Length: 122
Image (cartoon, rainbow, N blue to C red; front, side, top):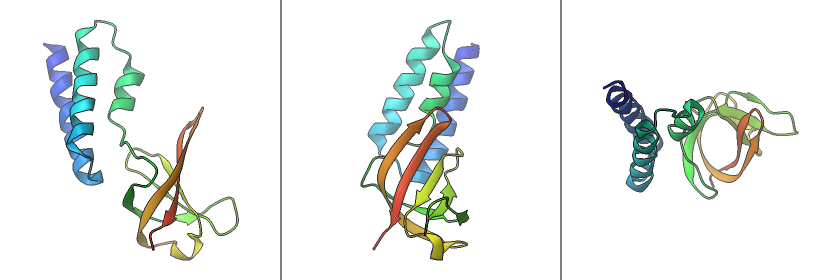
């Protein structure tokens, strides 16, 4: 019973995140199946479940981002996804304080999490 309740709650979280990030229905189905598979096991890995609800972005995808502060490198802007993932915007310094459309150029997985590199959409 607890597993079913967790599945329903996580499903609602995924639906909300996908509606915010314009996820494709295929990704939504994939996440649901992943969560359901893990909830069948009595030893579900909570880290895997947490990763399953993170937004999935691929190089070339576009989305809107609030650029909040200056990056470490010259002329970079930085914003964050709803799950706290840092997004670096190349040539984004002039967009600080604005919401702009960006295109994903690459994704870096670090020990501290993911960093998504983008550029302003032209």
